[in-house]
Length: 343
Image 1 (cartoon, rainbow, N blue to C red):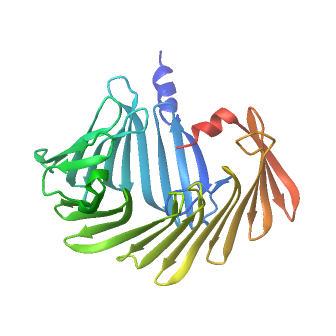
Image 2: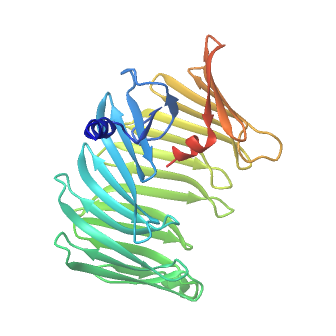
Image 3: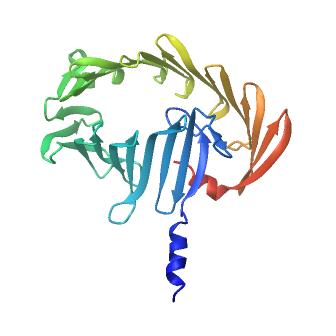
């Protein structure tokens, strides 16, 4: 019996999490697995997984910038509760059902003080029917009801200071010209053309801080999307193919191209992903077997030099690392473990 406390002390220091590291960007993307953190990475992502949830932490130059904590919630534990921190300060708590539908959102200011709590209500078919907004004291601030016409198109929003302007020139089609949501400090305005959103604007205290312009092709699919973010002095332009797949994204900051992403598809299959950032160029090439949706081989290049190949087998992935175009190391990753790393 005397050994038990000592054993418990040892077990208390053992982490039940499985840690993984990835080369990343400011969004927390998993760009490339890392064997270890060397300190030379500008952005890297650390993931911790266990049966009860997960933690993703994004670092910039070794300092934590963002963190997402996920855990099961609800009476049956089927819902997902995601908590988001920015520079170690709580900013959001969101809850999702098993289908990924958002059930509630809680937003916090830079001092971790609750700003607003939104609770969403859906029909039995999963159609959004209402949104309740509570203030920082938990009291009802605004209740929105969403009304639809017989064709399922949004007909009216009722509640608060929301304004809806109808397309009077073609009332029988029930096209909406403009929807404006005034939510106190922040406001949103959506302009529509032929039932499709053409312009989205975001306001803070009456000043426009972001604007997104949408352009559609003859087949009705989106062809390009342009977003201006005025506080960041940034401009992002995205181009899409006829199936609505993003084939190019360019990010400009203060008029200078900072990042360029291109994708090449064959049907719905991604053949090539390339990212240029500063003086660096990252590229993934994908090979497929006949009639398969997922790639059989993925090759990763940095500045034109082969770094790694991943051979996807039925039950595992085999990673082969290269130096001077010569294979120097390989490892096998169990497929179940890899799928557990996906967010």
